[in-house]
Image (cartoon, rainbow over all chains, first blue to last red; front, side):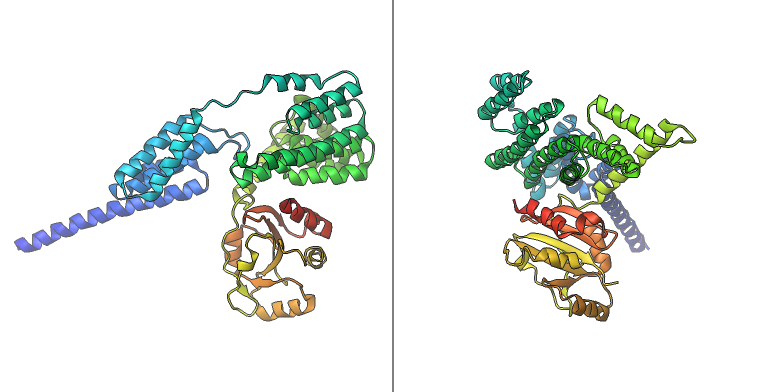
Length: 368
Length: 99
């Protein structure tokens, strides 16, 4: 009798322990999955619950610490309008310290803590201020006559090798109707941009960032050249360059999308023009006068809407933003190619070692 | 698909560029017939369609990915849309990544 009772108690205790363990595990898995979806509020709630379970405390604190590192230092522009949240930096360090305290042998938590401490130390260093002599030379580019302007661009480019004087100069030349000179300057800007990035490649630290910067420089140049050609009424030449800029900026640049809208309108393609204007307006940025011009052009293209133009526009823009957000979450662009379980056509394992280090075109197809 | 054969001509002797086709066909005989007809000059492999969709996150074929030398996916084009379909466009994407 007495023995029977003891056994029963033992079973109950074990079951309770098991239950708590499963629940912490579940919360941890849930929190990680939510964070993979970038649903941070719910992810934090689940991970905090998992951190209260001794069984999963270390792993949950580490996951929280990594999430806070992302929020504190890494989420700038990950989605349009996102910024780093410096308030999370201390919390990231605290969570990672808790992870190491809960399980001192947890190497991944130690590694994350070391990285976060590195981030924090780097924050303490003051960045170099813009050099006053360069700013003075920048200001001179708005010079009155074209020869003055060109001379000012050369002087500024000689003082510091980044491409911005070429691009500023090209824009000013376009404003003055000097299209051929603008094109020449923009093209030099593209070369200067690549060279400047090559020279400072290590400053980017991540290949993704330097690739993004190459693309930005080339996109700026292509858009300027395309716009100058458009103003010269060379529509075929404009199409080639403005399309190139769109590919380079992945359709994410307000000014370029606006330019494509203007081009389509000039070519009497109202449906295409409307798409580009909508695409432009759904993006952040762009000077207010251009945004206003895009809105007015749209209003002119858009036959009467039952609920009014403004309501129609708001619905269209919201839909585009949602689509873009969904695509950004889903796309593999700028992420490592996953390891693929490939086989040969006759069913043997496919050896991919020969592809390493090469630029790869990977095409998925079906014969039907 | 013929545009890929035409595009490949520019790169067939370039050791820094590779083309790889991945079929999601489940019917091996049908695939073999198609390949006999197309005679692609570059390798063709196969993958389980559900696996491919899960790993590469596309929802239409053809889907083309351009991967840089470090193994990072840089461009993704889904469907037979005009932007991805001429040798000039294919070369443009590859040349961006070769620079």
